[in-house]
Length: 334
Image (cartoon, rainbow, N blue to C red; front, side, top):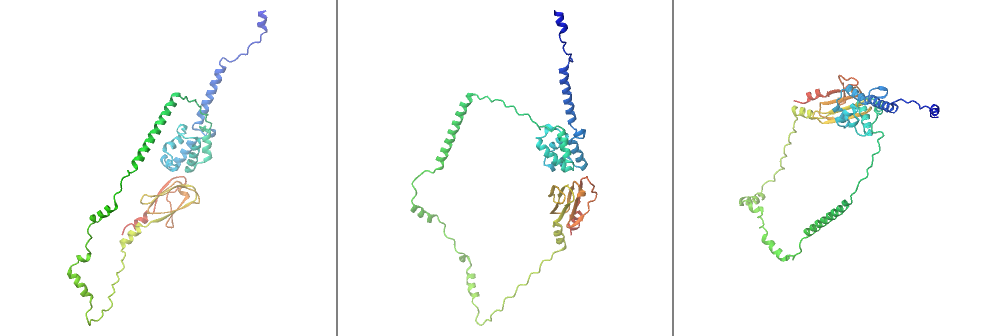
């Protein structure tokens, strides 16, 4: 009977010895491999968003410090963006704004950079809900809190009462007004002598004598007119000095998007902005002007209405140039 049951029993389905463990191992390996592909890689295995921005920055000849100053960020944030270090970056909403501004600054494709950022995982896109733990409130704390509050209120009331008592002057008999009026003349200083008494006697007698006209004297003619003072003449050194201190007019016309920084001879910063096509920016300052142009071929420079050629301007390369140095040399001295 036992042998028949054993023969007719359905045999168990053979399973791999490590089916459950092998499935977990495969999932872990797939997850780790996907993470390795996400870091530093964009969509379809292309460069990551940090690599794209770093290459464009180096092509423009900009340093991380200059990018950080232009974007109003710290240099550590720029370094974290290029290194795709999500642990050192803020929330994804802020990071996307940083990436757009960075891409516009270096002339990269914004959508390509954002696509690479999304392909990298975009940390914080689906954050887990925070776990709320119950807070234990001890009953003894409530009693101490009530006593402390009552003590603070009592101390505040005592301070207000002391201030009110100290600020009110004590009431007393007022002094008689007659005594004050009698004491006032005793303390007044003697009146000062008139200025006429300080004049010598001779001067006082001579003045009326001079005022009386002599009998038979002819009336005096009209007083002579004062000679006009000659107008001051401007010498050549003064004209040169005034010309040297005069401000020059600098005009920038944008044919494309470019980062522009302008400083005058005194070191004062006149322009520090990312200018769009069609923008016309006019400033005044002491020549010569020092210019930093991110895209020099997109900028037309005019000094006092005259176009200034930009020697060495090449597309995609930052240009540092001084404008108006020859004019300062000709007008700076006598």
